[in-house]
Amino acid sequence: MKYLLLLAGLLGLAVSAGAAPTVSVQMRVIPATHSFVCRYTMALAADDTATTLDLNLGRQLRIENLLSSGSKPPRATRVYYPYFGDTLQQVVARFNGRARMVSVTYSGTLEGRLFNEQVMVFSGHSGWLPFRPYREYEAVNYVLEVQAPDGYQVESTSSAVEQRAGRWLFRGRAGAIEITALVARQFQQLASAGTPGIRVVKAGPALARTDTVLLRKAERIIAYYNRSIGQQDPITQFTILLPGTNADAFGLLENATVITYTDFDVATDREALLILAHEISHKWWGYGSVHNYNDWLNEAFATYSSLLFLREDGDEAGYRAELAKRVATVGDAPPIRGFDYQKYPRPVYRRVVYNKGTRVLAALHERLGTAPFVRLLATVAAGHVSNTDTLLEIVAQTSGPATRAWLLAELSR
Ligand SMILES: [Zn+2]
Image (tube, rainbow, N blue to C red):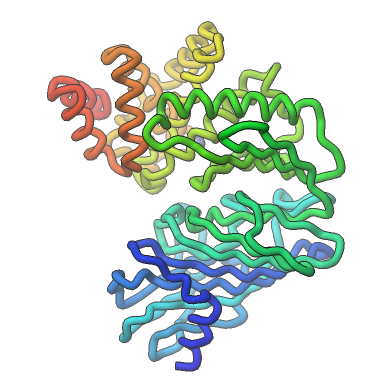
């Protein structure tokens, strides 16, 4: 019972209605060694009657303490996780009462690609948070508290709700592994003047001309998406985080994207522009499972959305060239429907889920015409559609059974 009260205190009893778990993350960063200590608590929603809760945690992290509201202490074991192709730690808690909470205290050191002399990056690709097996991107309501030493600042996908003496508090709703904190000695910011409110947050001492260009382009991309794919569920605020660690770029469900490239000029580099448009669109395209072929609902939709923006931007030739480039890789790639990533090397995944999926969407676009196609995308986006069967039903309702049958055949060949 003592444990239970402690955990309830940590969460501030911020458990809200609905199926999403509530997560509390209390992290202390140690920049000198690029390391951190974290207390992570997950509480299941009141209407979730699960009797066990499993949490996966990277094997490089060191578990210091485990607590739960169950009658026995949770156990941690090593398990093989196919998605990572690696062994990791799994914490298993069993419950016999109504409160379902697990708390894990652990420490770790960031991999080299996640920091530089300016910044430490805790985000979707940092492997710093526990998650339920095969549910990396499930939505969680979170409270994030970060403690950093004197001389450091902390930024996240939204502004801190509280900040005092080396402690920052953020709240939001994010994919389980996407809760984000950037820690740096200094940040620079740019913000759009109007609505939606768009921020560019860059780690380091100075902004560059390309950062202003990036903000202007992001404004155009978001304005276009808000009147097309996002017309039923528009973006009202958005944050672009630029840590400068030169590792990768990814979109977050929580109206934000992390772009780590330092050489990123969306005015002169079409590839950079496509990355920006792709990652922003993941605000809508992030509900399909990444563990099966439904990932095409994320990646093909984001890729095709970025191509649509090229066209909107007046680059019809670019749209055609980029589409042709992707179609050319498809060849005899296996069908999208039922595609199992475990049976193929990674490049096949890209050909099927990204490129073949993009080809199918381009063909659907041509079949329906632009206005009905865009309305369909907007409906799918607003519905947070997470599997292909639901998509097929929406297509049947909006475009008729013949188009449904056609789409099913395209996805199956
Ligand atoms: Zn993507």
